[in-house]
Image 1 (tube, rainbow, N blue to C red):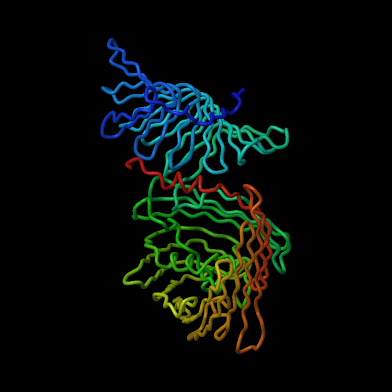
Image 2: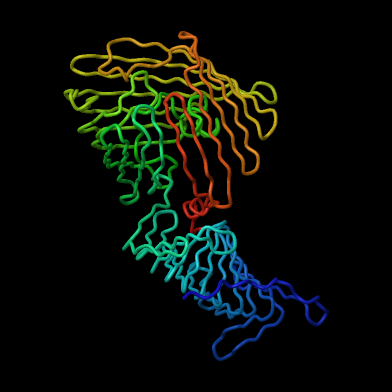
Amino acid sequence: MLPAPLVPPPWTMRPPTAQDAPIVRQIDDVLRVKFLTSEFDAETGETAFIGGVEATYGPTVVRCERLTIDSKNSQGRATGQVLLTDPEGRLEARDLEFNWLERTGSASNVLVQVGTVRIEAEAIQVEPETWTLGRATGYLARASRPPVTFEAGSVTLKPGRSGVARRVFVHVYGTKLGPVSAVPFSLRKRVKGIGLPSIANRKGVGVGISWDGQIPLGDQASAAAFWNSFPKRPNGFGLELAYSPLDPDSETLISPGTDLGERAGDGWFNNVAVRSPGQESSDIKAQRLSYSIASIWNQGTVARGSFAETVSKALEITAEAGGSRDGWGGKGSVRLQSIRESADEPFVSRSVAQLTVKPPDWTVGRDFRAVARGDAFGTFSDRNSFGWVRFEAGLIYQPTEPFTFGAAWVTGGSAGTPDFSFDRLYSKSAVHLRADWTSGPYTARYLAKYDLTRKLWYDREYELAIIANVFEPYILFREFPADTRFGVRFRLDGLVDKLKERRHSR
C-alpha cells in the first residue's frame, strides 16, 4: 500500500538575529543554497546545510530540513519533508537525491502534482530523457482521492514524446477493473492520442457511438483508426498510416485532414466547435507537410447538400502542405483515391485537390477586426471534372472580455460535373452570425447561418459547457449537419501540455 500523501510543512523560519541569520552560498555557476547552519566533513568532502534549506538551480527549487552536497560530483541529497517545485509541477518526498548539472534524480515515497493531476508512487527515477515511476496511482483531483483512480505497476514517461503505463487497473467506486498489460499514450502535439468515445444523435441513423484515436510510430510517423456504430447503417471503420518530415515539435498533426468533412469546418464562422478566431488563424497558418495512406469504409460526409453515410475508400494516398508568409497563411492537399458512395455502386478512381488561403486580419477601430478567407476544391476522374471556389469576409466585435460577436458574408461558385452529389458546395450565398460568452467555468457559443438564395436559416448551432473541477461536461447541437453530442472533457490543467513542452536544456 502506498504511504499517505506527504504534507509539506509551512516553510517558515524563526526571525533571524545577528548570530543566526539565513546564509546564502553560491556552490557553483548553477546551484545556490540558502540555510541557517552548515557542517563540513573533511573525510568525505561533503557539506551539510541545515535548517530551512532552500536550494535553487535554474527554475527548480528544492526545500528541505537537511541538504548534503558533494560539490565535486555535483550531487545533492535532501532529507526531511522534501518539496521540489518546478515549472512543470511539484514533488513531495521523504528523501531526494539529485545531480544539478546532469538534471537527474531519484526519490522514494513521492507525490507528484501538476495542476489537478496527482500521482502517488513508491519511487521515481528521473533521467534527461526518461522519467520512471514505480507502483504509481494517478487521479484527477486537487486534494482528496476521487471515486475514480488509475493504478499502474510502473509508468515510463519520455517528456515531450510518449509514455506507457504497464499493468494498469482502474478503481471505480470501490470496484477494481483490469489489469491491462500496457497502455501507451502520446505526449506529442502532433498526434491526437487515444480519445474517449462520444455519444452522437444523427438525423436518419439514430443514436450511436463514435471513436477515433492516433498513436505515434517514432518521431515522425503515426497510426490512426476510427470506428463508429449507428443502428441504421453499417459500422464505419478505417485505418491510416501517416508520415511527416517536419520537426517532431511542430504544432500540426502528422495526419492530413479529410476531404469528407465540413466545408471550411476549421473556421470560426462555420463551426461552433472552433473556440476562437485565433484558433482558426493559427491552424491555417501553421507549418505542415504530411503524407498518408489509408483505407476507409462506411464513413459519413459532414454538412453536405446530399448526406452520404456509407462512403468507402478502398485506398487513398494523400499529400498535405501549408505554412505562412508575410502574415498570409495557407494549406492545401492532393489525393489519389478509389472511392464509392455506397456498396451498390462501383469505385471511382480520381484525384482531389483542396486549398485554403487566409490573408492577415485588419484592425478596424478599437474593438473591431475584419477577417477573410478563401477556399477551393477540385476533382478529376476518367469521367468527370468538377470544382468550386468559396470566399468569406467577416467582422468581429469584442466589446468586453466575456463577449465576442461576429458577422460574415459568404459567396461561392462552381463549374463542371461532380462525380458524387456530396462534392457540390451546399450554400453559394449566405450570411453567418456568431456570439460567444465565456465567464469563469461557464461557456456558451451560438452560430446561425442564413442562405440568401433559398431565403432560409439552414443551420443553427450551439455549445454549452461548464467546468466542474477536473471535468468539463458539454452539449453540442448542430442543425446542419443534424448532429447532437453529449460528452465530458478531462481538464488536466496543463499536465499534458507541460510534459509536451518540457525542455531539458534550460
